[in-house]
Length: 107
Image 1 (cartoon, rainbow, N blue to C red):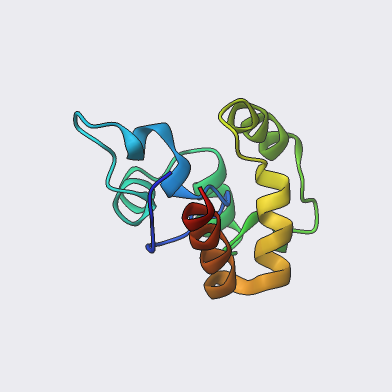
Image 2: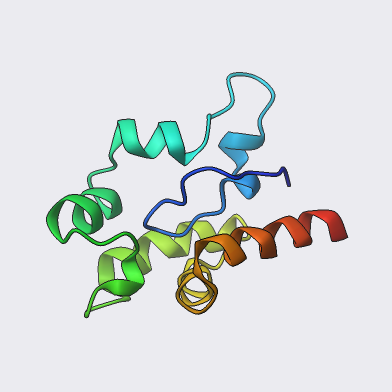
């Protein structure tokens, strides 16, 4: 795991635990650049561009089938995106990032 302080994507992935962010050859620069530029057609476009939400939990149909399918893939990589969304809702962005930083320092 690696410290990450940038943009939190609407799906609630913590980039500091993403294999693409952690790789040594050509690592992802994090959601700040990757998500805002790439704008995945699934979660990002639905949440940010269509519904004008910052996070999926703000939607009345959360967790929708699209989110659940996306979250299943990330569960295999060690992140529970539904739990991440609930924590974002309860803690807010700053405290959510602090929680992840604390987790990094504990390892």
